[in-house]
Length: 106
Length: 152
Image (tube, each protein chain N blue to C red):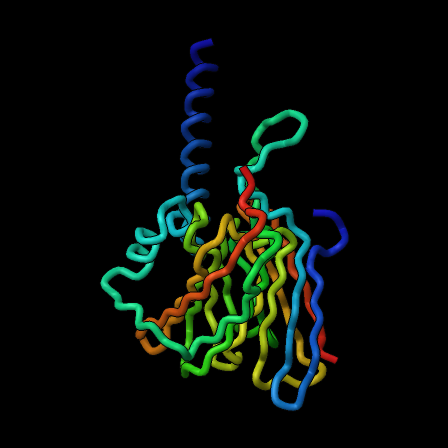
């Protein structure tokens, strides 16, 4: 997609866990919606897989359908993470687009 | 001319072959199973996702869901659980055309906590199934949807 990343990551470090939240800009089209003007069906376009890594170790793999809302939001809690640790979130959709972003826990 | 046509057919065969092999490798590499996310009723979806498994009802899975969702396009869910060793979490919506919303794998170094937002077509139960040590547990919660969010 464009040069700007589609992924936003926020993290908050607590004494006993670290909360990671992510927001991805994606239409998540179901393939059932119609274009208001042309009445033509909008083809399905949705994220299929998302991976969430902590220091390059896969923490969670997510497989999803178009039941996930537009501009998907996910949050996870890591039991033990330290400031400076790296979080990577990447996604791939049904049309072959993908994106990935790194984030350092503050 | 004939030569050209022969070459053309050869090329066509070759490209179609590589295309099909590419498509195949994509499925096996991605491991995203299109069939799981197909259109079918909830009973069929559950029995095909968890064949010959009993989904034990449990109160140990805590779902944070709105009681009434004004907009079915965006229903926030937060799943927490006190069950040990959960490795997979499934979210299903009973009356969605595609009941399976998402499935997550969870590494042991993650807390059993998932937040997400999903779409609901109409008022129905949200079913969350977790897998822990080859046991399956389920819990349901009803959400009233004022405005459906599955388009169409």
